[in-house]
Structures are given as structure tokens and as C-alpha cells.
Image 1 (cartoon, rainbow, N blue to C red):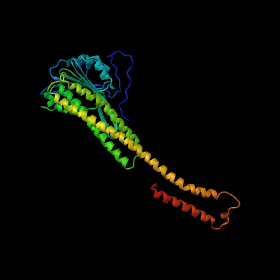
Image 2: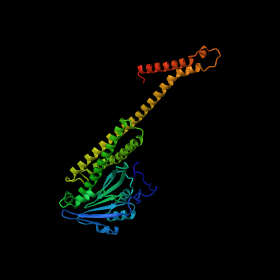
Image 3: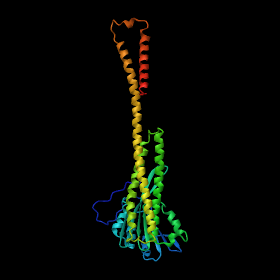
Image 4: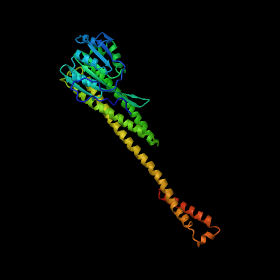
Length: 354
């Protein structure tokens, strides 16, 4: 069973733009980490008070503000006011069951994506929502938990002379989304290995307890596909040349990102078909096994039909039955029964029924 797929429902009838957290609390406290960087320096610090975010707006240096934990609606609302984010976008950020998408408004870009990780021991799929708000020289990222999923990007950003230092926040947005997509490759590779193991177990006759794993694999492919298909459309929106990410510098990277999303989607389609094929093979193997059992039972019952007939004839207690007085009648009846059974087995073997 996939974890993190069921969300608490939002109260119906609320006005549009009403901020309400929809989801499960995945972090003990809300942490806000800020990275100010340019071509030469990169300063990282924790934002202790959300009121201090007003000092972040209007800086000349590029800024990356990462929020871990979404259960504090007041913090998200305060950040939205500091950076002039529309309430409808903040509402989508707090709704952790939102589908991936990309919206472009007059002051920036809003992107929603789903991050997936596979737990190898439990074979469960972990999912959480990540959201990004791109402004002029700042990028705000929101994450449900405090899992360090963006740690590789932080290391690259801390490396002097890296491309992340030299480029703007639009390239940082690309790197973060690309990291999310890279995790898709890890997950689909794990799912593919699991499908191969199930296929090998099926063809080796170990199919008694494989229905639940096969069903789990098919559901995992379905959840992944539901996240990748809208992400493909979102990347297509980001690639529009009239949008904020339409510069020539970032376009090749977005095209490469789109190719990766298409590759993940094609792999998922193949794996979903393989999962369906595995289910068909499993059901066919179970049906064949049942047919084998029924064939054995039918052969046994067919052999015993004439033997039961002979036993029934001599079980009739008529007074005048000459065989009852013969001294060799009992072994003769047994011999006849055995001969009949052997002849029927030879007949079945000749017909290749057994």
C-alpha cells in the first residue's frame, strides 16, 4: 500500500483563496532555510522568525528560501504577503493533494510537483508534494516534510565557481525540478527490478503468494503516471518562449528536462503493460493449476466408476449369485478391478490425457 496518498479533505464551501492546510503533518516544526548567493559567495542561514522575511524581499543577490513543513498556515500566509504571492497560489501550496502543474502570472512562475522515493525494505512508495514560486531574483520552495531531498543541489550551490552560482534563480528552479525527475528514474528502475523478480518467480512456479505484490506494482505505476503526465504538461508550459523562463540560456536545459519526463513516462507505460501482463500470467497459471487438479480428480473418479459398478453388482444380496459360492470369487473380482483400472490408465496415456 502506498503511503502518503490519502489526504484529509478540505471543508467545502470556503471562498476561493481561503488558506487551509489539506494533508498530513509530516514535520515536527516548520523550518525556513535561506541561501543568498551570487557568482562569488553563497550564505546559508536559518530564518528564526517568519516576520524577518520582509527583509528578504528586494535584495539584489539571488535568494533561495526553502520551507520544510506546511502545517503552519500563518507562516505560508506571511511569506505570501512579503513576496506578493496571490492567495490562490498559496491555497494550492497548502493543498498537498493538488495535481502537478505550472502557472505563470505577471510577477513570476508557480510550479507544483510530486516527489517520490521507494523504500526498498518495505517496497512502499513514499510521496510528498513540493511547490516552487519563482520571482525576479528569488525562489521559494515548499516541502511537506523535512527530508533532505534537495541536498545535492545545496552542495552544488556551495561549490565556488559552479554554474548554479553564475546563473540566476530560473536555473535553480530547473535544477530542483530536474532533481525531482531524477528520483523518478530511481523509482521506476526499482519497480522494473521488482517486475523482473515477479516474472521470474511466476515462470518458476512460485505463484501462490504473488497476487498482492503484482497488485502493489500496478498501483505504484498508476500513482507515478498520475504525477508524471501533468508534470509533462507543466514543463511544456515552462518552455514557452514568451514566459519568464523563455531566455535562450535556460531553454536547452528545459528541453532536456522535458525529454527526461517523456522518458520516464514511456518507461512507466511499459511497466504498466508488463504489470497487466504479469497479472494475466498469474491468473492463467492459477487457472492451469486448477485445471491440473481437476484433471487428476476426474481421472481418479473415471477409474473408480467401473470398479464401483462391479462392487455394486456384487454388493447386491441376491440369493442366487453363482460367483458367491466360488472359492476364488473374491480374488477374481479384485483381479478384474485391477485389470480394468490398468486398461483405463493405458487408454488415457495413449490419448495423452495424462
